Image (cartoon, rainbow, N blue to C red; front, side, top):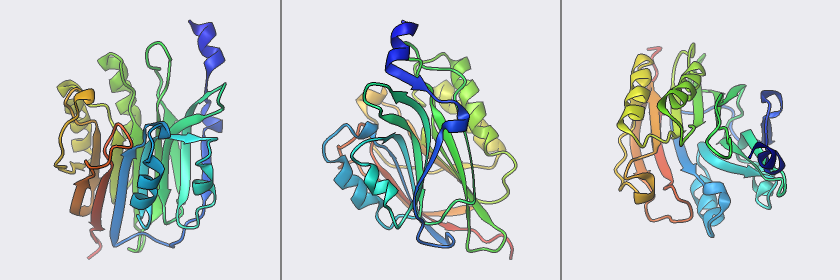
Length: 261
C-alpha cells in the first residue's frame, strides 16, 4: 500500500508549503469586515467558479478549504488585484500535479503568517491536513486581526483528532485582540465538538450561530464553523441554495470592537 501511495501523492515538508498570490487592494481592515467561508470540494462540481467569483468579489476575507493549485483556475488568484491569497499546501497528486490545501484571501496584505500540517494522516491515503494563520493590520491603531483557516483531519480515532486540534490552538496562543477561527472542523461527533469548544472557551472565542440544515452526507452534523473574539457579528448567512460543492458557503458580516476607549 505505501509503495502505491508514493506514486500517487507527495506530502509536503513545512518549508515548501506556502504560496503567496495576487495583490491586496486596501491598507487596513475594518471597522466593518465581510467574510466568506467555504470548502470548495477541490473545484470538482460544475458552477463552483461562477458561484465563487460572485461570493468572493468585494469580500474582505475569504477562507477556503480543499483549495487546489496548478489548475486552469490559478489565473484568478495569481492575477488578482483585489485580494492577496496565501495557500498552505498539504499534498500533491503526482499524476495530475494538482496541489491541495487551505487558502485565505484578504483585501489587505498579511504582515505575518504561520501554518502547520497535521502530525497524523488519514487512513489508506495518509492524507494530512493543513492549518493557516494570517495576521492583518486593522483600522484601529496597534490592533491586528488573526485569521486561522483550518481543515481538521478526519476518519481517525479521537486521540489523533485531538492532536490536530491542539496544533490549531497553538497558532492562536499569544495573539492579543480580534480573532477569526474558521474552517471545516469535521465535528461529526459530540466528543469532537465538545473538545473544540473547551479549547475555544479558554481563549474567549465565541461560536457564530448559523441557521442551516444539516446534510445527510455529513452524518447530519455541522462540520463548518466560525469562532470569533473582539468582534460584533452583524449578520451570517448559509447559502443553502448553492450546490456547486458538498459544503454550503457561509457569509458573515462583523465589526471590530475598539477596546482602546
